[in-house]
Length: 434
Image (cartoon, rainbow, N blue to C red; front, side):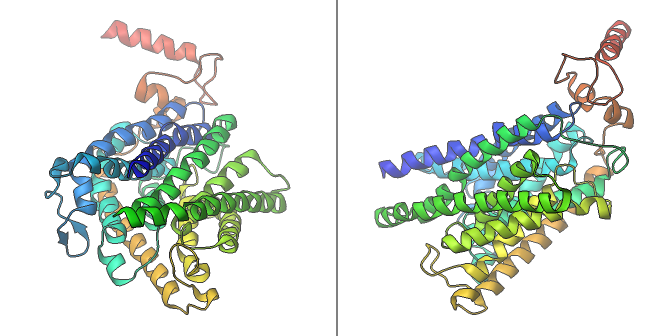
């Protein structure tokens, strides 16, 4: 048991690192210089808000003892971790980090234009109405696991489809950034993005390998069994990510003539997303196939936002929704009974049963997340409002929302059209008028 606790402490710390600082760096580098601090703050604030909500009622709603219609568990049974032993706190912490990064992922779809106050209000409602119920349905013995038996080791449905759908809904409800499709909105610091992608890859071993150990940790025998299977999830996570990165770069080269650093970073994340649900379900050939398909498909999908006029700022829909669906559904084709999951997919002679289960799990997650995200999104839109002013968005959302700028070594604010000297003058004037 001591080895189990030590392993889960490390895995939990790795997943925590995925939100802060890894995702913050990844998204921050992809943002424009005038909004990088705001983008990074959305990840940090998500960690703070979701962590508190999770220990109050999130754990109870996801893994509590009393099921409510198969949709969620009673939030009051274990409210504030009542009756949860101190040994159980490691499990709570591990799952808490999953909830936090799922919520933080959504922020990339609405970068550059949202008030921090609206984001803070959105977070507790969204995890309560969308994340905790889907988590219970998939991992907590609820509707999906009871009726379909779909495999989802680390969150293809709970994390990536859920966040991807939420990002899509919010992008549509909130609307496009000023100048979207008319002026370039390039990443301001790809070095940060590459660093963030590398840290995400590193942290993902806690995400995937930790999940397969967590799911089997009920007694000494199961713990020993799942320790012996961690190598499968470790290798699958690595090799699928490599395949996805190379496939993304190949598609970029064919479509645009260049293989870019942003493409490499995005391909890494696409592969990690796709192997998340399937890391314990497939063998090596399946992992390579899933990674390659996800890398190529996501590389193509991210370009669709310009054709359909949907401003998914940092490609949350194209990577997490598309990658999550691919990773979840392909389990039904290439899962193997020789993998830890023990189920043969269609291409391994298992028939259509597993494929049907995986498709249904994905569809339920899509519909649930879409409905409840839309309810919350419209409620905020018609009350406190989502967007900063057009002036703040054009000049500097960082300064407007936080009174800070990321870089003071030059006079421009990433094409904002307002110099730091002007902002300083405005600050002095405001202070004099106070």
